[in-house]
Image (cartoon, rainbow, N blue to C red; front, side, top):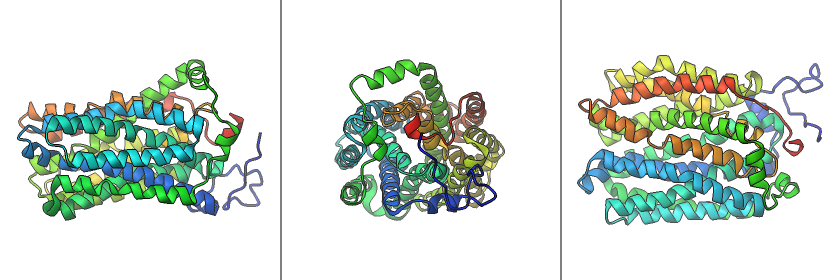
Length: 424
């Protein structure tokens, strides 16, 4: 077993390094190459999420343009989520067999091209098919990027790196919100999808600055390794799928229809919706960083459960507040907790995954959980439409139930915080 590296922030009174360093100490421990790798993986996930959330913000406009109901357009969201496990399997297998570095580049190009194709969709059925294909590309990015990033950093830095890496998803949401609020009136939903093709440029940075994972070079997957890993770790894999289903209900249930709720039920214009989204995404970023780093002290499970349960008292302000500023405050506090729980996920799943298949195992569990939760927006839209357009009811009820379920599943499961990847 390789000796664990000391990280700045551990004191002489703690010679064994048992005391977890703070967030800034964890991040400052990264070398230049590790920082480039982390930045590339963060941007890959952020821009992937940016492309996904463009559709979320454009739901109402697309429904108006194609003269259909919001519920019909939300099927495109559900299909995107449903196709992500296939992407996790295909791109994860490629990353385990052929390397994290080339697979990540192919993935970024794939989702960028499909985003551009979305801009030219002549009808809703065609757009839905394109978004399904986009879901395959989107599903591959997280597992490949998380494995590359976390295999490249010191074990003691995983909490902060995990917390910030996962917030690439929130950063993508923030970018989509800014684009919607500032440019939607000028470029429309099709123009937003054109902008969403720009992440293809990231491939140049990955090629120039990001090295291959040394852990992967020593643990290249062989034919049959994935099947052996899944069969030999079936109970753990099924547990992780259940955990990620709860996580994805938690995030998609609080994000995907919230802009629609603000527009349709609360009557806010696109500019105000964009501003509210910026506010609650700042809260999400802060929560992910805080709880990710805190999980090095509390442990992954306790950090997840604590954040999930603290979301419960935020729900009334989030959906029932009488004004836009108070709604923004409620959303800030709720997303601080939602993404606080999510901040532990990259580290937690990779630490619980078998060696040699870390490009596939955690990503596939993540995306199968996404598949289970893929109908969240459609369920919430159905609840709203069958209760007189009451989106607050669908959003609030689902979030309360899922927060309790997530905390329960997390504390009942295993944990392997700080394990050396090459020893697993």
